[in-house]
Amino acid sequence: MPAVLRSLIFVVAGFAHGYAFGESIFGAEASPLAAYLVGLVIVQAAIATGVAVLARRSAAAAVQSRLAGAAIAGIGIAILAGQLLPT
Image (cartoon, rainbow, N blue to C red; front, side):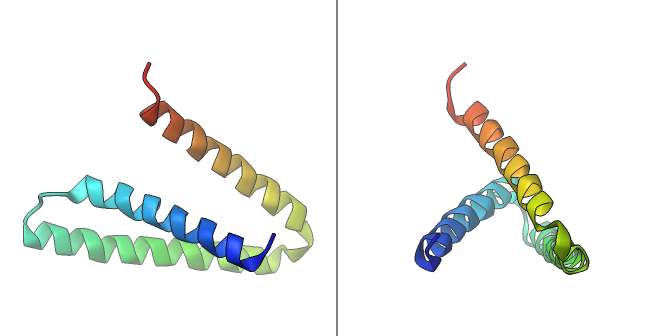
């Protein structure tokens, strides 16, 4: 997959991810909003660091990591479809 296409997918996913987190705190006062954002940064940094450490330790399991990522993406798409499509 070309780097430009990967970057575009990453940007679109980032906007959707940010929108979802922003909707959960929309309309809050300043102090809960600040606490929410600080907590969000800490948790997201911890998750990203943990995933990076695990990925480096299990470089031999690259196929399994990709399959796990595909499964997580599939779950996300199913949840998104459940929210967007009328029932």
